[in-house]
Length: 232
Image (cartoon, rainbow, N blue to C red; front, side, top):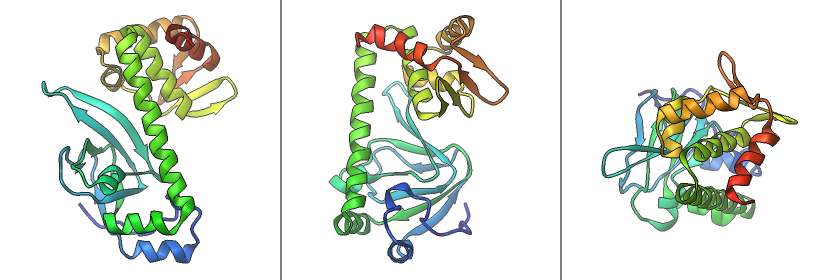
């Protein structure tokens, strides 16, 4: 662990509406840490309620079943934040957060975060939009787990990643290339199933692997496959 050289929140998306002086007022109240890859940032059920801003790097939000099985919920990158639920309701953490790579993190006390939300309506709106997105994503995953077969859940997870990836018309580039075990964790299935589904999609010309990425060559067709089994 070390202290980041760059201690500013200029790339944090929910704070982009603030002026440099307004941001600086909150930057000085943050505590800064550099987390190494695979280092735990938050432990599930931890009773802390600080909010964390990712100024560099990438983290993963995970949960663990009683059997010890890891369930990956989301990956967050530079410019995003996490930990706001505990700051808002004062309850223990609901998930574990791990650094996927060396990451610079700013930690803000819950009282300070709530002050930001109360003082700046634009920031409050961004926080609400982020919470709405979490609810929508969680609802979609619950429905998929309850109603879809394993193959379709894998297709749905690939579509979710394609939607979040860099896109050019009908082509999406998922980088870095998703690991089979990670897709399996998100889709609640096995690595073998993931490999089989990707192989089938490759044969159909919907996806193809490159050195460091998975190319969705026909985003519309993948979306149609998933929407069809969802009954949309």
